[in-house]
Image (cartoon, rainbow over all chains, first blue to last red; front, side):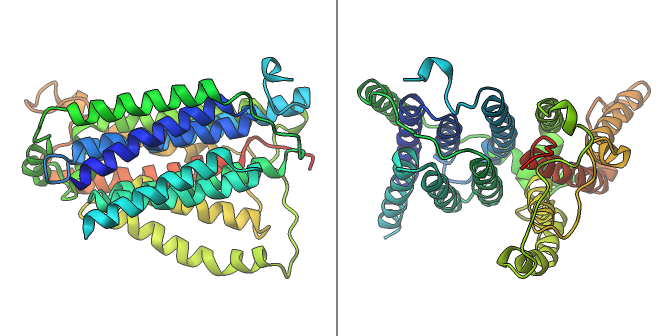
Length: 98
Length: 308
């Protein structure tokens, strides 16, 4: 029962993250939304793996790998955002400019 | 009672996520995101996933938070107006509903927990998560360390020509009597002990190379942000050696297994010999920790820059 609550919470987080990713225009906010989507998926996967009663270490190991990869992808994304800012003095993509 | 706790926890997680998504300023959004990460790591504790809780608190909340705040400090205060909300809201709500329905429709499964717990003692790590990471799914972990290196290459490739050869990140200026300088002296010894303990305990208890490495990376970042020590230049040979040492040792062990398999049945690429598995896993973890800590610190510090 409790596991179901956390799994549904993960589903809701993915929805919030996708909403923010599509809605926000500032690139740093999009990186943030990408991280919300990621941790929502991790929670969803972890809760799905815990339904058997005992904790399942295989999804846990997958999720730890996922957290590390998400962090390195975010670092690369932030570096790209800053490079874009230096090159064009803009914090949004050209197609999102008003 | 525990159901009530879980419901309150989920409400706080979702609330923090919504605040991070819609907050008026990006600074507020980043701070809400850090709070959100801490709540999520509490949810991991509720799922008995102690290793994931440590990783989420250290990386998801800690390092990602530093990354966002540091980037924010370098951006001009620009007007930040989001686009129309209707279509994104419908997409988000639809996806959340579909995922929720899929979760409720999942068939029952016992998972791989019992299999891993039976095999873990022979694999050289009593902590089943460490056994999966470094023995059963060592392939994933090996490639993950290489993903970290690839991301660092990408970040360094974004540095401008004039700045190449400088230390990673911006040169720091700190008030010598400020809060940051004080914390920079008090926290690193505690952080170093916690980081090394997490690696050491990781084979039998929650912890491991990634969690310990992240704490050590945070210590290195704090020392450099407080201006107490200068980070090495990106062209330094010693820095590059440390960056590749962990993956190289891991790969080396893997190839020793491949060579042994020529005349020893049971040996294979990435298969650790059972008699020495525990000491080999500890050795690989120590080297990996060093490389992970330095790579993460360099990733968060960003490409070398020469102007403020």
